[in-house]
Image 1 (cartoon, rainbow, N blue to C red):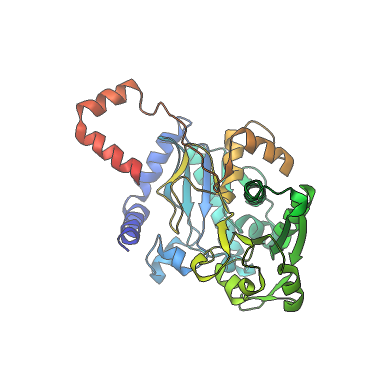
Image 2: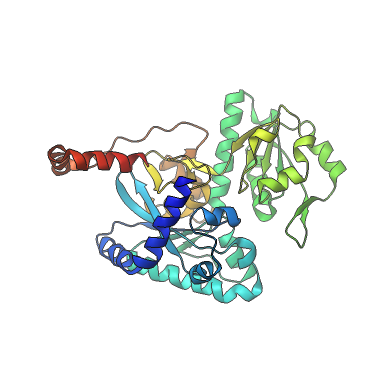
Length: 367
């Protein structure tokens, strides 16, 4: 609770009283070529919105459609990007009448890109799909949707679990829950890797709830499955559909929902499939919602890879090659932080001369 209140206070101070000084600092830092990428986040529900901003209607109206800096993307001690947030939820932005808000968001992100000198703009979660499919706005550079990062992250998570189980892929059955276009692409690529695949169909009600299309058929599909990839929007949807009662207790669930499945309430092993790692890279401030310090959202990968790699990213194969060369991997495996020549000789001298400064830097490093 204390961390949430502190985060809200810092966010409000920066969003209102320090808004223009922060833009000025971003412009000054951007002239040095420091920033490589921008990444735009959104809340999946009101509880995630509260992690940044108090639930005050006029405040949310003011911030609606206004990407606001919330933290930095760091490579060791070196900032390489900025992550920003909007209070608008996906279901809100999907409405046709919100096209003006969507255009405002994109226009402001392009302005921030010019201000910061960043080369890529990443869109979290469903934003890219919503902008392209619902509003007809093509996702072309500098904008990068989350699709390639999501596929890479889940493939790496599946491969990691199968390697540790010491089974060949053709002996492993994998079921995908929902997912739409992402689920179809993922099925194709995992089938190409040799896994035995099946899709569990769902339908969405007007109220935004999820129902199984055929509960009996789903029970047969899930009875003997080894891995289940949950692409349903919220962990609540998984529980409400009683899917944990249809799945064998020996199966492992790779969860891609937000907010995630509460693992303590079900018998199956639950792991997060939407998190990747690369030595040295982390978000500062750490993302709320149970994220570890070095966990990176899979949806941030496309813009990160585009800004860090000179290789083309025209298809998933080229993306996988570039991501592998940059040593991205699933967060299910341990990746040690890369040794960094962080401060240089002058900074070391400053630290030794001013122990209070040293303690402050160590404190900031631990956040």
